[in-house]
View (cartoon, rainbow, N blue to C red):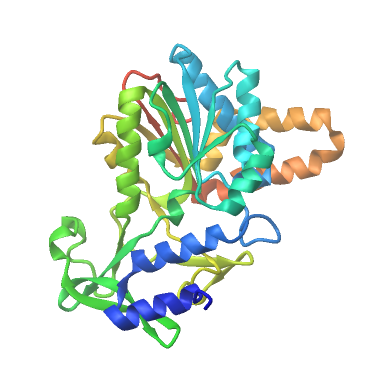
Length: 348
């Protein structure tokens, strides 16, 4: 007897136990989604910055190498959370090597499909399902590009009775959001408690827990983290839960496990969690400003000099990565450094 599809399994769980938190729905859907496909590129559902141009990964590699050099060149390991196809790591490692840094590589990845793609580009990497397996014998140089946006969120809704959790109910295999009965008034930030009815507050306990775990490692071992994602600095109200399929927005409550579910990242909360473990936070700053500060202009010019036929392609890629109307403003960069490590570039 074959295993039922994810929508049927979720529907059965909801029928037996009642509506489930949005975080449970999102977590199950994304776990299935990433485990069963390569979602990137024109044939996939979305394109990330490293897939737009090699310049993105190269500049991140140089950012890490510069920090490592000014920190005294300690023993270090490169760690990437959710490394996609391995494109960013491949480009970053090439740039790092030219600066004298050739660290062991560790990928935090659970998808067999994506692990196979990563192995083609970075065959010497070691794979882990979480941070626990990463050795603690040196500084960690950590990159997370479009990783935190896919971690499960909870949503709290302001109702006439107060703040309640948004749950997911089911009719047959039609999923829909409903409001639970339990009160969450006590955890709402004071400045948001009087928000209008219908307001939605998003939280991501999974993101905070991971950040605390990561920060503890860096405080003990040294190193830095660079987070690139789309998001905002909270606390703020708003519904950012969304689905992307075939490079278009879709209904996140349709076809769970067959489309990418994300939410905007609350950078202020991530920074606060890191500071609670004694890390120093830098930013967030807009991706466009960060890449320009790191030298994407001179790098683009160098690429065109070496391959004049690519001039238009390079210009388009730079515009896509840095343009305010494209990725430049929506995406933000948050830097985190261990106590005693130097100020990172790009955040002045």
